[in-house]
Length: 528
Image 1: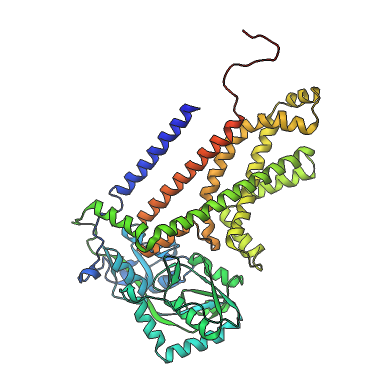
Image 2 (image 1 turned 60 degrees about the horizontal axis):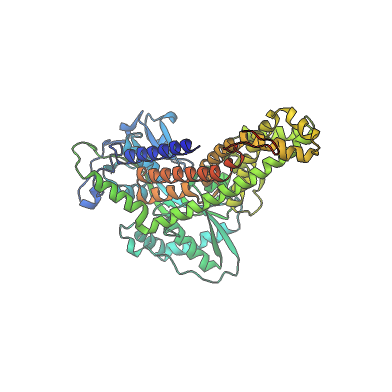
């Protein structure tokens, strides 16, 4: 076993070294270049594609669920549906363009301007696809739609919306402060579904949500007498949050369309913008200079140090650990309960029902189970996403661990149980003292492997508004507009976490079932 432990440690070190070499290698071109952009230096970037018609048959990145795919197909001649690449965040789309995986990114004007200011090698095509208006989304027939519209009208007439637009689109972050909290809320609470990767409309600084759309809602809530509670999720899940009545309002850069108005309420416009196209700068990647290690240092600072983002990572890691450990412990207990029920009468009703449940859960993707529980089964109940995630992973791990343990128990020679009973053991004693220890030697290593898979599978809990380690990585990527380095950092953390948990379980659980080394003795018998 000592040799196995050393081999595992060596493999772990090699894997980490490989990840670091990848992080420091030439693949991420944007990292090795200067962090300054053409906007910062005052130079005018020339786009690789000059006209919208040049994008025919090119790969175009869009945000899933943001309706921009429809705009792209309608306004880019020759573009087909299979030319579209769907991503969950702006950072992923920007990264795809910089890496050459996509030729263009169709997005809202303020997002494109921020991306250009934060990344060298990007440019905005001069030709807009269309003018656009953004509004908040609410459940169909919501009583809050009219009162929000009244406040938006008042803010438009007194110039507040114009002031907020200038404030949040500005490159100067020092003035981007939020209203003071603590106003009276006689009308109760409004739940707001939003994301934190949509600067300048809604994003996160430290542990606070901010942005133009968020400030508008807080101003309206203060004036109307409501308290706000935020549900942070990915952009593609905001509308599902609103339609399932989990949230009262959805805040993002939602384009006001007739199709959306058929499914839900939409407020009047609070931002008149447009849909534009972000592409690479002409000649990007050629004759670029700059210290590759300077790029790494700047990426490290932007990922961990700026705005104390390391605290976000720690918070996300804590959520991942909470879900993983509780789900693993509860799932193991559930799986063991399944084993106890099945051994009462193999082939009986309980055995068949448990087998059916294990087959069902084993054939469903984790993300589907999460969303079914959160949006359908518990759709009408105000239950935290973390609780739903623990329940979902408990069921999934319980079904898997139960199946593994049951197969190991059945694999023990029946003669062992017969011998136990012949020695005078009862049924329970025979199982726990004779059969189970032998089965545990077989199933314990397999359960550890399944638990490690469980930890990695928790990376999808962002679909139900849970801010775990992966979701925090998305938030950081959205703020830095840099996809590669935050992904490498999160990958290394996951790898180290999985190795640590596997080592702890192996050291304190599996070894208890291993045969003891050393001489064997029989009482009263001299074996020398």
